[in-house]
Each structure stands twice: as structure tokens, then as C-alpha cells.
Image 1 (tube, one colour):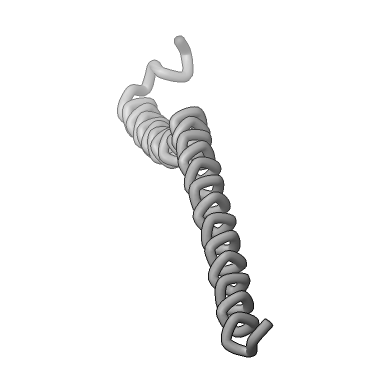
Image 2 (cartoon, one colour):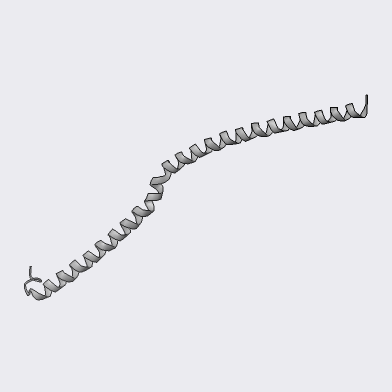
Amino acid sequence: MTWWALGFAATGAVVVLVAVLLIGILWQARRIRRLALAAADIVGEVDTNTRSVWRLSKINKTAGALLDGTAAIEGNARAIRKAVAHDAPDADAA
């Protein structure tokens, strides 16, 4: 066997090895893409299912504002009642 034939065989073996590795890389890339798409779908479902939880923060802020408003109304009502009670002399008798 000549050196030329041995070099040709070694080159052929390297080409085959590189082709096999490239096919493996492509196969893994497709697998990763498939898993990434599945993960993206799952993330979308989680996002959809947890939106109501994130809205609770807004709801709590709104409820707090309403509570503050009712406290202010109650304070104003007490002030009005006190002012009316001082103006009416019969208020204590009733």
C-alpha cells in the first residue's frame, strides 16, 4: 500500500467522521428546537393560568383605595352629625 492510498483512506475516514458528527449535531439541534417549542407552549399556558394572580395586586390596590374613600366618607358623616347635633338643642333628648 502506498503512502498516497493511506493518506486518501485517512482523509476519507476524517470526512466520514465529520459527516457523522454533523448529522449528530443536526439531530440534536432539531431535538432542542422541538423541546423549546414545547416549553414555549407550556410557558404560554402558565402565563394564561396565572394572569388572574397578577391582577390580584391591582384589585388589592383598588380595594385599598375604596377603603380609604369609605373611611373619609365616614369621617365626614361623623363631622356632619356632630355639627348637626350641636345646632339642634333637642338632639340629646331624642
